[in-house]
Image (spheres, rainbow, N blue to C red):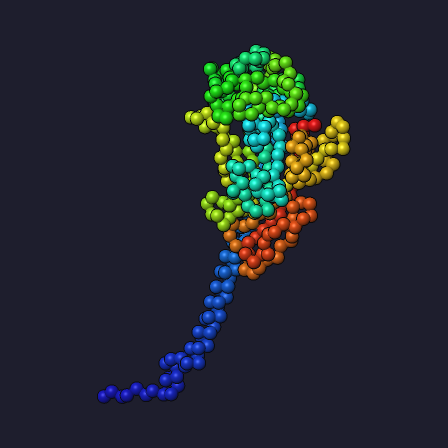
Length: 385
């Protein structure tokens, strides 16, 4: 005989949870989960901040080091101070061309208007940013083995890698005279021709003599205003060097138009058409602005190599392009931005200026990107007084 199981009220209460107990449990679970989510969010935010800060600082170091190395060599022609006194550029349109002119330094100030920038990259320049051009001669040990007077043929001491169309520089051993020309022919690995006819834009004339005042040739090959060329040519052991030209400016990244970047416009040679031309290359992402001031040595004769004042590019070009020969240092200020937004709330930034105390339109921090401003002063080793 089976006896029925007795169910007491106490055993009934132990069989489940009341609604109040369930709600309390859910609340506690939500609080715990909220804490876990908060920890994950903070951890991710910290990870993003650390990653962006590391990337920003690495980009800043690279940009400053790269520009420093290049600007230090601006104007190099294989000579120590003083620079060549007599210079002739026989490339058509060479004088006035930012990449075919003689070795040196040149800048562009946005205050003067973007129309003053070289046509090759003016459409890509971000508003309120400056640009700087570096031209220098690259030394690989080429020397003349025979005197060059009226002949267009140059014979060098070793084989060279240069092709037709490559702009070149030739400098006398005493560094008194320099010529700039474009290779017109290479009859052998140790021969160069600076004649007319093949390269583009080509040489207006075959002569490479210096002049007391900078001379130039128009497209028709007519000698422009200036003192007539000197009669001396280039003797044995004169240096023969390739002309290296680059411009640096701020534009929008090619991979993401919302990201600013530091670009260089570099002179190259098309070996099929024998043409000297330029092409842009993206160097560093995140460079949002670049301001450049130029240290002028103007109060000493001869120059002592020390900057007496810092001015904008248009204060030099607007007076006389020849004043670029007096630039002995360059002060660069950059503002860099993280690639991705970092901050949860708006961030307030110190005013960014042009290096001379003038505020430049920028961000109010509402985009929540991380930013950093860096500045450096670079001595130019090859100043031209």
